Image (tube, rainbow, N blue to C red; front, side):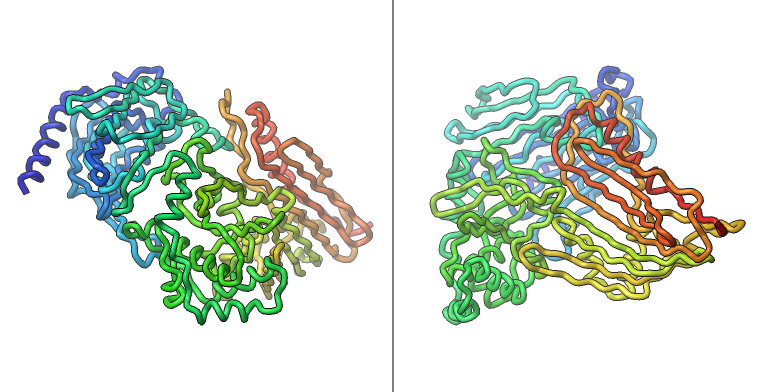
Length: 636
């Protein structure tokens, strides 16, 4: 109790001293204002490792919010659980003249469970506060401490954590006993580390940044670590939830995970092992045998996350999953691995940074904080296959855009191995649509269309397929820009073979799709797949152009025209061919049929910043083409 009161009064004294700082916005150097929505006036991060199970974080921040685009930077978010304990939070809000207008404390924070909707056990919580000030500019100053009972990983220092954020002054000091070794990785840091010793004899590593200009937000930029600043720190030896270890590279890290977290967790009941052999009896191809077992696992289990203590890193025992029929990504990968082992199929437990944006761990810096998911690798000869084990519906060997085309760490008895997951190319990611419509003399449209989805577009309709029929129809109507669209029938089929395909078939009608006036019918040629947005203009672009994922869309619509009408006006054909993509749109007329064909292909990759205007023009041409009308007239 006394220690808590002492800390409280120390925070008040510290903030009172901080109040003597001048936060008048006019004192910010004009050199820092270009592209800035916020300016960090001062940020001090001190991390002190007192012991392997005792790390203290002390954070003090003053940031000026210049406009509404900087509001997210004013958010204070502090994660905590039984391993990471908040010691105190206090702050003051200042107006543009540097005068205090509001004080806040820990009691003003919203403290909520960080619930993701599917976790069975998750003790992670978050304290959150936003000053809700709309009188710009203003400055928010705050300070807090967190005690962490582990030394496996440390929060990265990110002085400019986002675009639009300039920095007057920011510092990061990591201190530890002389025998606590660390590795560090500097990214886009203009000044190098200063290494010294403090008054307590602790070794110190200090980074400081002054007058760092804001990075302009530019569409189609590479991953942020290409242009924002950061420092990562990893221990040479550590402790987490009573589990100790050491590693200095990916091989050693994978070995530690295998030996300390994974070994001896693959046993399943003898009855289950016998059933796996019976289930795959007569299947000679190892890959098809693995597919059979994978589909058994999917039918038997469901995904529930577990993020408590060492359970955040260590999977359930395979035998427990076999009995309980649920688990998180770690547990389900471990369980699938155990089932495959019963029929002598080897596999690797792989950790990965999942998400639609492709991100790989740093090749030269091993640390636990670069991953958030687990998948399974089957190292078949000349046919390495990866499995996503958390979905009951995803096809065998299909990763979609969640874990494709990135490095993962395979944890094996011999140690960690960096492997690369499959890449789905622009040609693979295909959406192919064919429609046959009848347009009558009143402008009404009716007919049928079929769309095939492949590659990462395979699950474009996954959410809709799972919905009730009424909701399915409502959401399909949002997918298509057909006015007055009435869906009479919608059918989906999914081929879950090694090259999965989703097929959508829709029977529809749309009253007054075409506008009828003075014996003319005017209608949009592209009824099914129109683009609406164009990347914004960026002058003096600095970043390369990065396209995260490629795709191909092909549409063919055949319109049966009303008797007695012929085409009076139609759009000119368009054909564009650029290094990053291709677009074509054509119209042909034969007797009473009009055939509209459209093809868009975007090719993923990194391109020179000089082609950005070409990318804008490319999308502008698509939008304009997609809005073109056809006019029919009656008579010869």
